[in-house]
Length: 325
Image 1 (cartoon, rainbow, N blue to C red):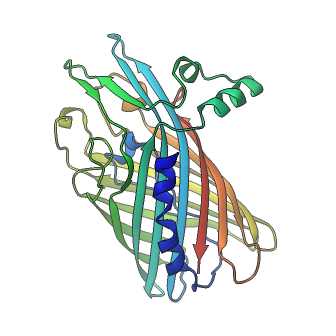
Image 2: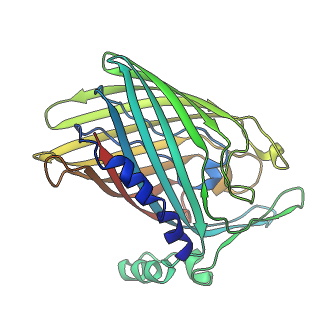
């Protein structure tokens, strides 16, 4: 956790930049996959409608997740990923006109031994849904190992806190729809492999607002992206990706809302023999969007849960965010 706290030292600099910016109306927050198995390949993420507004808009979202993924291939090769992950995204958006906007996502990432294993073991036992993969592992111990079909053994190191890949984008609005194109630059500073794309990725998304009232909005969209294969694992990497989202916000009282987004992506890897690596990804991002006082930033509180692949995966992610203007 000490390494996690070292990453949080970046927050005061963010706060100084954000402090003077007023709040705007609520939108659905974007969702960026937490699991580096996805983030090390795909440039896709879930981008809901970005409402038109003057001036700069800033959103800071921090996710801290506990991960346990294990798998055995048909030829009895083992896969293990056991870690706690930090994901911090600073989103900055600026309208050029009512129809066009620019955006950037500056990210901080981290991978650690963790401190949540004992609590989560107790919690799963309490609700009667134990996770055998977690119970078999020593508590609060990082591990990311895999034996590939060609016999190579990959044993990745714990990275600590590092800068992630930089995402830059531009969007255009058409009535109740938008097009957004992004480029993801390989700026990750982690010393080990597996924590960044190591090459430029591009993506495009089309999102529409399917329903809107004074209480409810519903967004849905599709996206496509491409990242070239590279490095020693190129034979197992996919380069083309498809994804999408469906999300809704329900304003239940004043400016207080509940939201839920289901984001999905096609497989990022191929022919490794592990379903958790070669399979598609479906994730639920849900929580509340709260305005405690007029003129204060909107607060995002929620969790992320993997819906697919079934079995051990991202156990739970705790998410806190602030949205200014």
